[in-house]
Length: 269
Image (cartoon, rainbow, N blue to C red):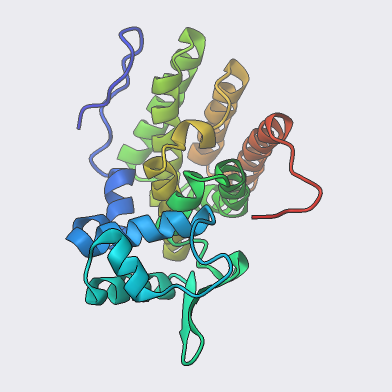
């Protein structure tokens, strides 16, 4: 796999043991975009629901949707069933299909994450993903400490070096890519498969939604140094300190986001 970087920074090839986050994301999504007309309609309706263009004051009528998008009633009903499985709509006799409140959506569904990220809630979505990472990535670092394979140990140290070099050169693209693999590697080596699954869903969705640069830590010498320290603690087998370093890194990221995009007093969608 070839990684694109600027001419100044050379990012070593991805480790064979570290799968592409995008590939993981697509497999977790179930390939809705690859299902032809049905998948396209799911994507269109999902995005329209997120931005409030559908169902604000009345039920979703399959016949109207079919005429609007020139698809059969069967395609519409199949698409609505997919959205119902994602918690976005509900169908009831004598009531019809209505959009459910946002808190009732499956907010960890990769499609829902992407739709919200590309809409008006993009900033909130980025913050929420960062907050979620604060919950499981310190645990992943703690559990991975002292348990990495020899190849993973070498790659982690190598990536820490790449981050330092990219920060010194101001190469944001190389920094974001190295940061992504650094964190993905720790998750992949974490001996807790539930943590790994959750992390891959969040990371894969963030990358597909074009949020990897925003969701990685701030590019700076200090942040790169924190990655180096984290790698050192993990290689030394100090899980408690590794978790603390990871927590501090992610907290700094949240502070930077909060400074750029303050959270409103009352959260709304």
